[in-house]
Image (cartoon, rainbow, N blue to C red; front, side, top):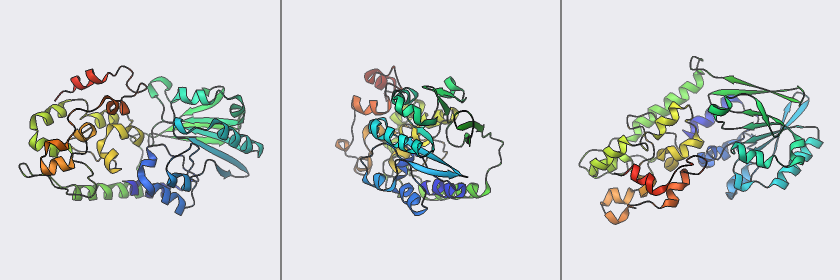
Length: 335
C-alpha cells in the first residue's frame, strides 16, 4: 500500500510533505521517494532514526509567485526543541517568509508550545492534524491568538491556504464528499493493489498447521489462531478489539495515525488493511506476541498468555482512554 500512496503523491505534485508519525511507518520508502523526487520531507522534531534525520529537513521553503512560505512540522511531542524551533521561525520571518506551523500533536500540546511569545510572533497560521470534529466542527479558529485550521483526516477535506488577509495567510477548508468523482489514475493504483493483495494473502485450511503464505505476514493472523482456539476466536470476534478498524471507518478516522493502534495488520506489515469479512482490528498478536513460532510448532511456551499493563497502555493512553484500567479492561474482553 505504501507504493500506492507514494504513486498517488507523485500525481498530486507536492511541493513539500509534512508527515505524521504514522506516515513515517511507510518505512524507508517514503524517505527514499522524497529524496529521489527532490521533495522536502519536513520533520521539525528530533528523531532517533538516522534515516529520517538524513532524508528530512526541519524547515522547507516553498515559493508561491513572488512570495515564500516556510513550513515547519511537529511530529512528536518528545522531540520538540522549543529553542531550535523558535530560532528557525525567527530566521524565516526575518527573511520575509510567511511561517506556517503544522502540528500533529494534540491541541493542548500545541498550545503549550505556543505559550512561547517569540514563536507566536513569527507564525502566520497553525495547521492542526488530526482534529476532533465533534468539538471543532472543522472550522477555522485561533490558537494562542494565531489563526488555526483544524485539518480533517486525509481524503476527507482539502485545506486551501491563500497569501493575503490580515495575518498574511487566508485559510479555507473544502470538504471532499462521497459523490466526488475519483481520480482515474489513483483509482487504477488502488484497484491494482487490492487485486494483488487478494492474490497473495492466501487462505488457511482448518486442521492443517498454519504456514507463512505471504511475505506481508509478519505475525499469525487471528484466523490462524482460531483453528486451534475456536472458542477464544469467537469471543474475540464479538468483542471491541475485532471491530476496532470498522469503528474508525464509521467515524471517518481510518487514517494511518489511528490505525497504528487499531490495526495489527498495519502495525506488523506497514500495509493498510483491505476491507474483509473479519475486519482485522486488534488481533491476538497485539496482546500475546506475534505467535508465528507458536502457530507453527503448537508450543504453549512460545506465546504470552497475559499481557503486561504497560503493553495495554501503549494504546490506551490517558488522552485516548481516560477511564481505562488494565485489570478491568482485560476482564471486559476475557476469552
